[in-house]
Length: 207
Image 1 (cartoon, rainbow, N blue to C red):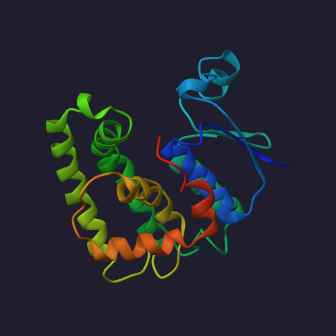
Image 2: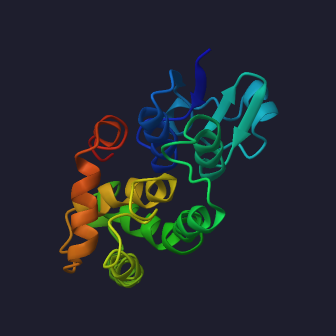
Image 3: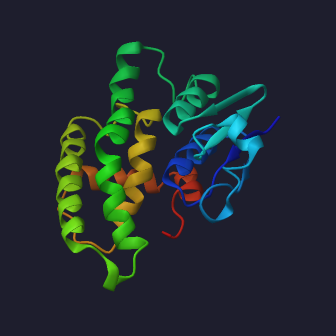
């Protein structure tokens, strides 16, 4: 049975789920929803996800929303020997980075991304760009520091803890901005770029 994923391919939160599925080699069907595709206000979708957001996933009888929760579920169900670490101490050291992305990085990153990718140059709010850029740079320096002692945010091997920031990192490294030198973050990102699942689900044109 295929996992069904509702969401547009260019959504960072949807990319997290698609990348996770690719890593796990789990068959899935993606259904366009959100943004220009609509769907999220249709009664059948609202019944699944009353937040009217993407992604939303159906796996058998289970319907689940919130991208990080979906990644955790998929890793626990299908990735016990790959993305999911049995040792709680190791697992939650990785897990904290997932919530950190949502609680700390996502908001300023959205301001930067929308201005630099989805707004024509003459309409960009450059004061907001500079402010959000500095906040993102400071936050990413924390991840860079963590990566001085381990190759992945999940530890010695790639795991679910790398997926949320990795999905944002592609836009960070592809946006037309002058980035600070964060060589450990760069090396980590280069390792992600070698992964077929990342190439398929995340490395698409920024829109």
